[in-house]
Image (tube, rainbow, N blue to C red; front, side):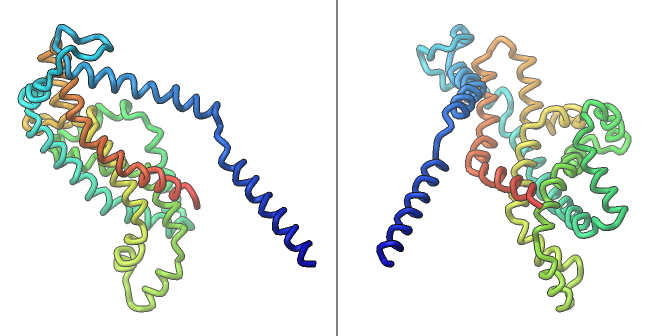
Length: 291
């Protein structure tokens, strides 16, 4: 009897080991496709870096520079007025993140807990439909409206990031909110908590992964966006980094190394943030997709 049991245990262990080996089998075809597709990012990035460190006469080739021109970064820093542009981008980005988290998550909570009502179902599908409307369709009317309302400034730009991102944020937040047991909210209400108190004390802290995802995607969008600042901002003192680089490029079209150095400086902060926070982006979207 003991011998039979040990034989069964050995057989099951071999099955588990074989299954584990099969689960960890590398799909070389898929790996090769991913490696080839990664070249579409790595090659332009390499070209940008080596060009930023060359003289204007050497620009345009993939070869390494004969002499490393680190001064291109200092020149770009001064020509683009990088500190002012970076400060404007930081103000817009941080304010957009805070305002988005304070409003979009609360809207998502209200819709998720009232999907049985026709009005809230309409709001849900209405906001989702915003994701499928091309921005170029509403670009000119939106710019005109912001001018009429005297919101052609940083405040108007921040409000647009909050409103235009609502559809995507609802999509990834509502699924996660539905996974939170309503019994937690009912217990808090029995203790005298209001709906506002339930959200901020119970639901909002539990939405940490989704809030991180919303904050990171909003930061990437607001920092890198060019089109919205172009059509909204009318004061040159409020230019964000992409807009300041656009003006700089139109003035110094022949100095590619300096232009590419400015691109790298603009890309560096958000690239560092994404490298350390990409797990929150992927994990948050996956959590929001599971209902």
